[in-house]
Amino acid sequence: MDTDEVMRQFDLLEGRIERLIEQNKSFAKDNFELKQKITDLEAVLEEKTEAENNFSQQKALIRSKIDHMLERLNQASEQSGNE
Image (cartoon, rainbow, N blue to C red; front, top):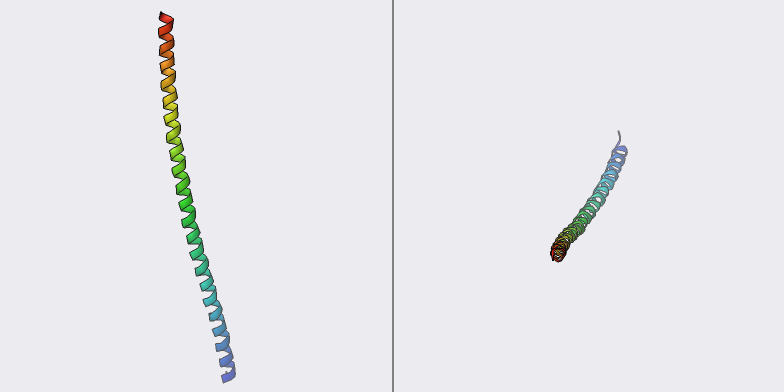
């Protein structure tokens, strides 16, 4: 192999290495952006889960108050029926 051929092979190899480095940088950037998106989505999910839990607690409290009022109405109805 002559010197020109060796130099050409080195140039080809150098070009491939440069493309791999650029591709690696691109993948690293994409990876960072995707990790950030995951973090953002997890925060949104946490907020929605909290809101759902608050809604469930409010619903249970309202149900409890309605049940209590119905119980009182039933008792009042029974007392007025006994008179």
